Amino acid sequence: MNRTRIISVLTENYIGKTVTVCGWVRSKRESKGVAFVALNDGTSQDTLQLVIPDTASAFKELHCINTGAAIRAEGLIKKSPGKGQSCELEVNGITVYGNADAEKYPLQKKGHTLEFLREIGHLRPRTNTFGAVFRVRNILSDAVHEFFQKRGFIWVHTPIITASDCEGAGDLFTVSSLDFEKLPMHENGDIDFSHDFFGKRAFLTVSGQLEAEFLALSLGDVYTFGPTFRAENSNTSRHLSEFWMIEPEMAFADLTDDIKLAEDFVQYLCSKVLEKCEKEIAFFQKFYKNTSIEELKDLAEKPFTRITYTQAIEELEKAKKAEFEFPVKWGLDLQSEHEKYLTDNIFKGPVVVTDYPKEIKAFYMRLNEDGNTVAAMDVLAPKIGEIIGGSQREERLDILKNRMTDASVPVKSMEWYLDLRRYGSAPHAGFGLGFERLVQYITGMPNIRDVIPCPRTPQHIRF
Ligand code: 4AD
Ligand code: MG
Figure 1 (cartoon, rainbow, N blue to C red):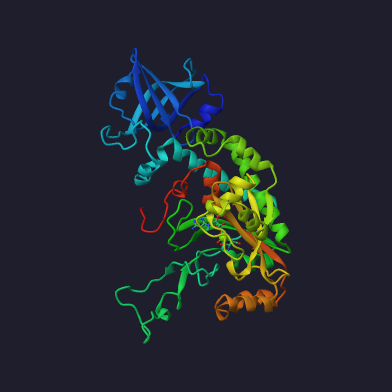
Figure 2 (figure 1 turned 180 degrees about the vertical axis):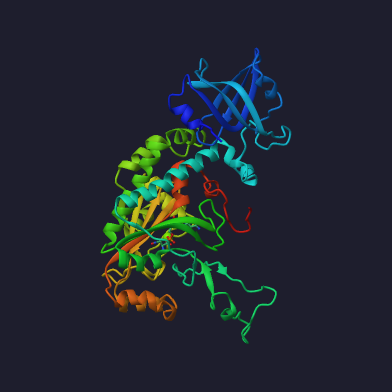
């Protein structure tokens, strides 16, 4: 089927050319013997205006077309005399592929709430908002690969089904082919996973890091970009049970290299959105007011503030206690309200917090000289909080073993991880960027459920 995309018609010079476009009708109106149809095909923030004089044979077909119909239109592209568009299509012929029931089509012209649109997740990509979100998501995904490929990182594919719990937080989904009606049991009442598909218990991955570590300790600099799963019961505007994570891992690198990579990465992604999605960002700026071109320019250019966890606690203690619901005390984890206070009120921009107490971070993070803190770093973004979590990894065998024992990590099943410290161990570091949190930050969408096509959250799964 030969068709021209509407983005091409609107951004390249098509005036005087005959084209065929296909798309969905956003609206239709008639005035003084001429009908106008606004057509969108998902490629552009803007619609193409179709103009059909009542003398044209296509005018007859137009009467039966409703908002939401899928059509094909042929005609001549002309300079538009009207406001709001530079060109329009003078229609010669129309084909209606599928009309829409005018009474029942849920996307009427009036604005809908994001909550309502979540209930019609299969139709919401046809709206201005979700078209923009998914186009921005596409540009960002592409830019991820561009960034790492330009720097010589090797794209590795870590598994989705795994036997290990990377974060040690226990928020894992079990993957099983056992018959739930007839579960094999041990005498003590536990399920006997030796009868399961893999001969032992398996999970959906929470992070590709552990596997990325052995690939980095062979290939140098690597990255993964894949779905990750967490069965944590968090019903917030920034948690999903299935989300995408980008995880670079670098051999012969320390925490400073890691922070630099994270800053360059976020800035690169941001600059690509500014370059390729100006219309979409302008739309978010106008209708949601949580992002702006100026803010993104700042983000793409200004260095991030860097502070240690200890300094962060000092800053937060200076703030009035009444500001926070959760306590601020050295040794306790930063809550989202504390993170936002640092980015939005104190430093007014992204903040990298380093050197957290070892008790609140994962076993694999490198122990600092002080024996109390680890070489961790979190990148906090205004309005969102944590978008990146990373660290230099513990490369010293004995210290790592002790940390695993302290954190009750099953050392026996992790011998392969310890081997990396036995044979040619090397300093290495990496991080994980939560892709949806970044899309949320850049678009200013208030809820993470609105930046992924099919959100999975506790008690909710569709499609
Ligand atoms: O801080 P996290 O748990 O770090 C890791 O998983 C490391 N293994 C990464 C690494 O060093 N390779 O998660 C990383 C990021 C968070 O900063 C956050 O942006 C995102 O993943 N994230 C979530 N995003 C959406 N929904 C959730 N439930 C998330 N949990 C974490
Ligand atoms: Mg984290």
